[in-house]
Image (tube, rainbow, N blue to C red):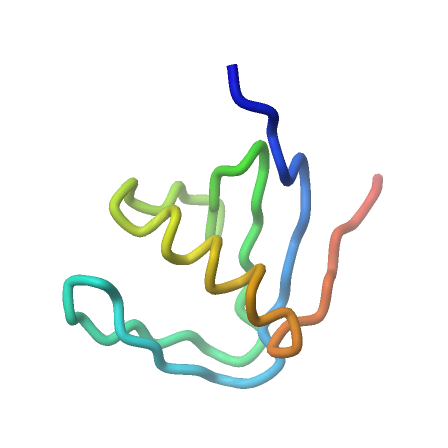
Length: 75
């Protein structure tokens, strides 16, 4: 079994951003949008992101940390 890289992190986008998905679709994100990664799985607005975008978006977030504020909350 592979080791989990990100157990629980929330990244909040600093400014609105548009990126092109691997299938050519344009993805538009609002300023302040949250990307919640739990056990290497990405959720947005409480919903699981489709499997075809998981790796692409997780890599985009982790490789572009300057675009985000880490906003992980501990309750």
